[in-house]
Image (cartoon, rainbow, N blue to C red):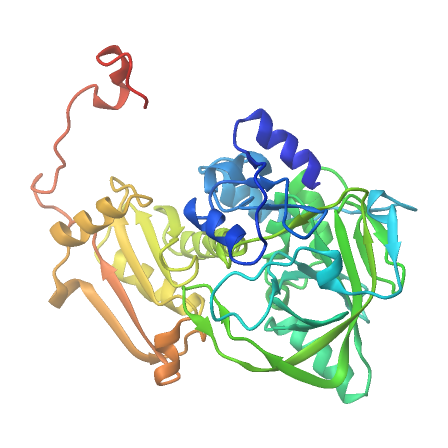
Amino acid sequence: MLRYTLDRLRASNNLLECNREVDYNYEMGAVLKHFNNKMPILFNKVKNSNIRSVGGLYGNRDILFDLIGCTKEDRNYKFMEALVSPKPYKVVNTGPVKENIITRNIDIMKILPVNRFNELDSSNFITAGVMVIRDPETKRHFTSVRRMQVNRGNIISALIGSYKLTNDFLELEREGKSLDVAIVLGYDAQFLLASQYPSGTYGVDKYEIDSALRGEPLELVKCETNDILVPAYAEIVLEGRIVAGRRELEGPFGELMGYYGKQAPQPIIEIDCITHRNNPIYETAFPCEEEHLTNGLIREMELYFYLKNQISTIKDIYVTEGGGYRFNAVVSMKQTRLGEAKTAIIASLGLNKDLKQVVIVDDDVDIYNPREIEWAITTRAQASHDVVIIPGALGSSLEPSHDLRGVTDKIGIDATKPLNTDGRFERVRIPGYETIDIRKYFPNLEV
C-alpha cells in the first residue's frame, strides 16, 4: 500500500524527502502548508521519535489520478463503475501489519509522532486515520476519515460525524454496548478514495469498492482484539472501542475552511492494541486538504451523473479547492435550449445540502482556471437575469457563516452565453496557439 505508493512517487519525481530533523508539533505542518499540501513529503528524521512520517500524499489531483490509474476525462466513469460493480476482497492469515503487536502499556504519544498543527488546537490530532467499523447485521465494512484528538495514554476523542457511524454507535449505546473500531494509517490512494463514498447513501462495503478501484482484491487480515478486517499491508492499525456512555471535550481544532472548529463533548475511543510493520511510517495530513480532495472527487461523480441524466450536454464538473471541495462547484455544459443552465443550477443546489454556490459555464471555459470562471461571470452574466438566490436553506456546520443563523443562503450563477447571438460571444483565437512549443524560442527557459 503506502510503500508501493512511495516507490511510484519516487519514480515519477513526485516525492520530496526531508533529512533535516523536524518537530511534529507545528513545524511539520508548516512545511506541508508551504507546499499547499500538494507535494508528498517523507520526513526521515522526526524529533523525539524513531518513526518516519509522511504527509501531503493525496492533495494533488494530477498525482492522485496517476496513482489511481485514471485521467481527468475518465475519472467519473471509473469511480461510478466501482460503485455499481464492486469486487470481492481477499482475507489472508497474516500480513506485514502484524509484524509488531502491542497490547500493554499503550501510550499513543510515546509510540507515534502524532502532530499538533495550529496554535489553538486543543491537543495533538490524528488527521489521516481511516476509521473502520463492521456492520453487526450485514457484516459489511465501512470506512471514513475522522479527526481524532489524543487525550492521554490510550484514550482518544473522535468526531464521529458521519451518518452511518453515528447511528451505529448510538444504537449500540442505548443497549449499553460499545462499538468496535479499527484506525488504519499508512494506505494508498484507492483505499482513501473508497472511504469517501457515502455509506448512508449507498450502503456498499467500502472494501469491495476499494477492490474494484484497484482492479484486484484488497488483502485483509483480522484484528487481534475484534472481528474487524484491516489491510494486511497497512503501516499501523489501532484497535479499540468507542465506549458507551462516555464523552470528553474535543477541540478546538483548525478545520477544513481555515477556521477553528468549536469545542464540544465527543465520544472516546479506548485503544486496546496497536499493530504495525517493522520500521513503520506514520501517515499524517495537514487538515484537511487530502481527505477532502478525494471527498470532492466523489461529489463530482455524483453531481456529474445526476445532471447528465437530466441534461445530456453536461461536459464536466469541478467541486472547487477554494470551496473546501464541497461548498462551491463549477459545471461545464453546452446549452442547446433556453433554461438548461437554470435547470442545472436548481438540480445542483438540491442534490447535496453542503453545496452553497454553483456556476454554470459553456464548454469553451476551463473550469479548473479561476481566471476563466471570473471572465465568464463578468462577460456572460447579468445579475438581474442570471443569478438565482435561495435563502434559508440547510447547509454545513463546517462553513462558519452557516452557524450564525443555522441556515445557508445558496446562490447559482448562469454564466453561459445567450443562445443565438450571431457570433457576438465568439472567443478570439490564435491559430496554432495550443501547439506552440515556447522552448524553441527560449531554449533555457524552464516551463
